[in-house]
Length: 216
Length: 283
Image 1: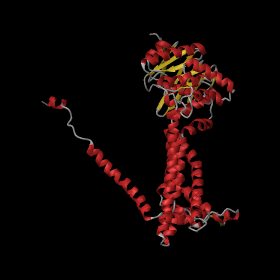
Image 2: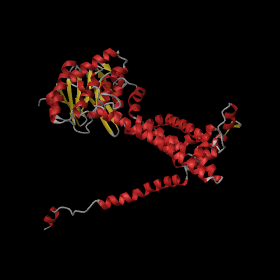
Image 3: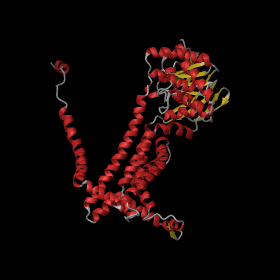
Image 4: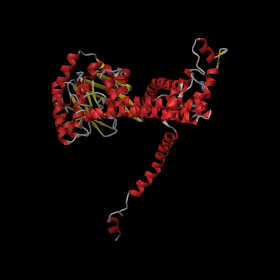
């Protein structure tokens, strides 16, 4: 569950003022809005990457407003993927688990499951520099999913992908949602993403979040 | 008619005058550098170089140069990595002031750097100078080997800081943010993500600091002196040999310095391109 209450965040000269919305546990929510409307700022505040000036953020009932990003234990996929270039795909996937000092065998097993789920088994020993856009997106998703987050935040995950790859990724995101039942917040400006994926459509307009019909 | 003209193709002119003029202007500088090195090579002979290498004073200077430059390069990294990272990643009060301070060693005349160090160590601290206090605890600096390292470090570190700052600025800060969401503290994100991604910058900064230190002369002359078999490094050797009219020896040592600098630059290229090669050669 993600609950945002009267959240105010400043990002440079941009001010996100008293935004409120709620996403139920296990729901796939798509947040839409024009460029510059504050979608990414909202997402970053939920992830703990931007401090809230006022208001509250709750994840699964816990107030995380003042917690560090690490303590929030959510999955984050940024728009530019930001894969770790000094590591192989396998090391990227294992990163969050290594930080948590997870047992080696558990890590190997988890990577195996993720490689299967995301169809990236052949890429495991490659470097991120040699991946296509779609492949890099799958790896970024896998890296976030490896820590088994209850909340997943996706920032424009399908931008810069060609139409065929987008369709594949829609399928993949749907199957990930079905398997993990994680609460997902997906930021996009593509209507098709909302139509194909959203249980709930949120629109950020003039500084307010309104709920809309995803199939409408 | 006008419409027809506007639709006509732009007149075909050749691009070669543009490239030729740029090549001539740029090439003039390259030619100057090559000519200087060639002049040194033709002026000297293998006999002069072997004579220079046989001299115990020059052998000492070579050893001290190699050791002091390596220590300087390491010390420079020690300050350049944290400082470069903070300047690249953090907004804080007084940042512009710190940036201006960091430019001082780069724009200041080298002799002034040496003089300033000399004055600093003569500064009175509760009745005795800093140098006296250091001598009392058995660590004299002025006119000793530590002064050579400090004189080199004072200038070289500024170049290393610039290099590290640019390296960190070129890295995507998002990668560190993702690391934070995956459970890292800022320190873990730095050690696990930022620093490995900046490793080529680290290598470049170290090499640059090393090469700057090798060429440093003014601050060493003033702060460490030019005592043979004590504070003599290769740059001071050139000066000392020249001052007693032994121009052949001065040129021979200059060639040794050119060779050392070329070797270090080549090693850096090799490591740099090896890393690139490794990345490129992966399936």
